[in-house]
Image (cartoon, rainbow, N blue to C red):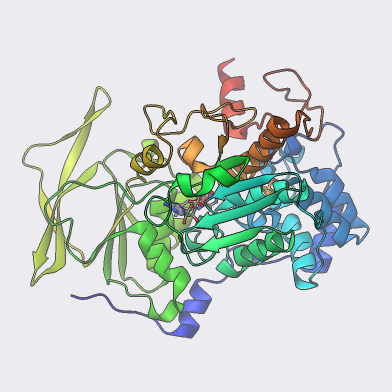
Length: 482
Ligand SMILES: Cc1cc2nc3c(=O)[nH]c(=O)nc-3n(C[C@H](O)[C@H](O)[C@H](O)COP(=O)(O)OP(=O)(O)OC[C@H]3O[C@@H](n4cnc5c(N)ncnc54)[C@H](O)[C@@H]3O)c2cc1C
Ligand code: SF4
């Protein structure tokens, strides 16, 4: 059956309301006063942008919300979106010493939102940049979190920056891909406007590799930053994959961000293939927008899924169902539309997934969302930069301290460099690359915040999350093994 909207505007707005609503001024004050303002605050080490969290929280306790927002945005220009989308359990809040005291961690993300909402609502610009941009010219490819982090830092250092993006608006996945109940596109678009006010120029609707080649750009610039993210969904390689109701999960999420919620076309029985965070976002949003059944199908067991446990719990609470150890072998059509999936049981032997012979069955579905990983933009990167080196997983090779690639003028950051992490990592890498570009062009380094940590870092107990971010669960696993 063709897809169609399933719920009305009021129901859609309620179903997609903020999952973590803003704190009231009273709640924010109480929460800020719980903070112990640690001298060796581990939360700073666990924030990849190294925000001085105790300082901004202390400013909230004295009602200095503009100052709090300045502390946040000077470290992380996308502090408003990170406040909503960061997996804080894995980052700052997961490192909070309150957990050692067997208390709830300080709600750092929600306090960060409280402060950044204040400056956005009151149209206060806390960041400033020189009006005359005479330090040099830099081209930024991609207006996602990585490109924005790089552009904002360079503008503040006095560079003339032009950002190119194929989409009609900036923000990358922050604008088009994050689950709607975590963040509205308007928050991301407001961040882009703030960066425009720093003097950055944006050129939208320009697809690199199709509308423009690097030879058109590189002659007139001193450095190039590549923040092109990842490509579309990997192919399944099964019969029926090209039917109209087999859709890339990212494209489905983009429908939600680019049209009224009540007009998003949906199926009554939705299958989501894959079990990473994108799959969870897709299944949860399908369920919230009225799908009667929404089922995750994953070829391995629950223990091997890449989705965070708290995202998995959310999907279960929303009524999604999970078929583990199962693969689709065919999309079955009726009258040219998706009618069902032929599925088979799997078993993992020596790390490889094998189909159990004779285990096939057919289950009705009318929409199939593919969330089996995003392709790397290997072809595009090789076309744009023939000398660039990529590792065997398609990530651009670079020096992690400066984000410089093998090509002297070319820097990289975000998902194109990491293969896919989080918004906060992308914005941090963009900023690091901007500092790398500045050091290359002037020979002068911009140094970041320095913070002693009880956890220590690979190079000793000094630094901040910006230099050596710790991941709480990785650290805990290492400590348990040790
Ligand atoms: C569905 C989904 C949900 C996610 N949810 C979260 C979350 O809740 N929290 C979190 O922290 N992270 C989340 N992430 C991860 C996060 O969105 C990414 O890590 C982050 O956006 C990476 O930033 P980036 O700038 O490298 O890439 P992107 O955000 O992908 O930006 C790349 C930009 O490059 C542009 N571009 C690409 N190719 C071309 C071209 N040829 N010409 C011109 N422009 C081009 C694109 O239009 C885009 O604007 C999610 C990711 C996905 C896919
Ligand atoms: S940016 Fe993210 S990780 Fe850093 S303090 Fe804010 S919510 Fe935590």
